[in-house]
Image (cartoon, rainbow, N blue to C red; front, side, top):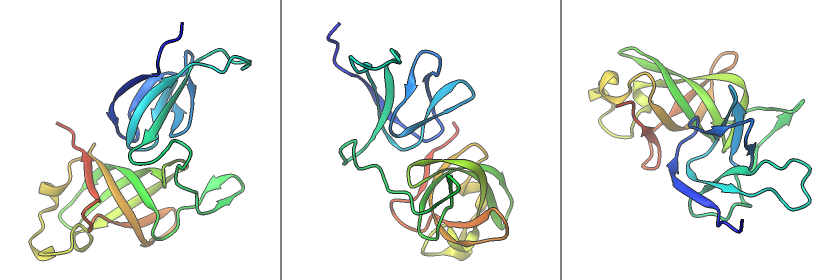
Amino acid sequence: AGMAAATAGVVCPGEPLRFAEEFRAGPGTYVRDQHVVAAVVGTARVVPAEAEAEDRRPVVEVVRHGTSGASLGTVTARAGGSLIPQVGDEVFARVARVNPRLCNCDVMTVNGQAAEDSFSGVIRTQDVRVTETDKIDMYDCFVPGDVVRARILSMGDTRSYYLTTAANELGVVRAKS
């Protein structure tokens, strides 16, 4: 069955790709709610199991754009096996609530690795973009369910981080239609 690895279009973090009973989670993915889910923005592909692999399920992986599959972002710190986000880390977060001053979101991935623990992020009006921060209408910028690419600006209180989208490569990657 020498099929070439099937490629799909671009996927975003948090996007379910395949059922976990039929496929294994490879690089750039993790398992949540019986699905293999994308952990990075990239191209999803299915790779057949190695000939000598005990587990015969094919592997789903997401390859980041502009990199070979090997160089998925290095994780800054692991304490007791869990991911500790650091200032400057890139995160993908899903918008949970929006009010006129800020937007609350749930961090899904840190530097392309699934966040095992739940972290919440806050984007304040002054951190949405670089210019004209006084003219920002948060309701125009973010809708609950949007997936946002952001960078950690500073530590907030427990398990909460201030995030910024004020850079060209940051911002909403997948808007809820």
